[in-house]
Length: 440
Ligand code: FES
Ligand SMILES: [Fe+2]
Picture (cartoon, rainbow, N blue to C red):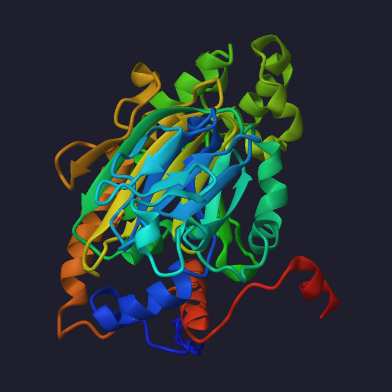
């Protein structure tokens, strides 16, 4: 690693073909998408038995259904007669599912309960052998997670430390206040690459220095097992590189101080102290504001952003008051397209973070329905707009004969780990159950 490029030693170079080639897309589909736990809907989106939602993940459509016993099952959304897509609505409630082609019917537990003219099939009624094909399914953090690999390790084992660390946040009870799904003109990994590093913050998010310290020397990074990672950004303070000519009592810091009954005037000349003061004040006022989850959070967690990347396609900036939800989904066939789910969930209180990373900010705190838009059609908020534009521009470079592959700084090492894990999955790596890992 003498030249500082942390891609040295990786199984494959980090070149443009990873983002353009159909062969690579196929290898990822067979070895990553169909072998990893994927975060899907909220469990409380389907509260009653028969309630369902359909998630489109690349070439697969997954039907997720609440069962009579309160559990949740997931199935490939495909009729077992001749392969018609079974459910076309993205969500709803049904006592059973009837295929629109020849009327085969499937109960909410996946069993086939009716096939037209059963006596006309050799061997009689085909239903006993024609249940829907089930997909592994679990619920964690209020989300339903699915895994298309029937031999997968349990979700808890795959998530490792993340399973434990997320317990501190009230992820079971959140309100979604932004839900834009953007059709992006780029490979799904360009989103994830961006979410794996803070090297781009000074350029793509120059506004961030008014509220967060973005220098790598003050951004602790942790690499977890199975390709997951964490980066911590200190917030509620002016960054060191905020120009002297600018006031250091910035608007977002001022807003946080006021929101917690502190007087910004008391912090003039010592603006960096705002972070610790807000932490202390949040602790003090949490009981009267009904924010009982603050008890479970560390002082840092009360003000800072903890940015988790969950292999292979999810990232979230968790803060004391909400979750920025960033999910990348592949196109069915085109490696140069993807869907970017850019959502925000609030726990209860608001904070300056939501003003930075959503389109509506605090003014738009109502429950949001999913809205599918084209890239560039609408603003995602000042921060995410900065990311989306570079992702689209970067895709063009991935096709260039003049691009020799990534040269990564040490502070971009999560990008290297991420691609290394993709390569390892392609080469056959699979997470082991926790017990097996500890015994090894
Ligand atoms: S394909 Fe569904 S009933 Fe024939
Ligand atoms: Fe960014």
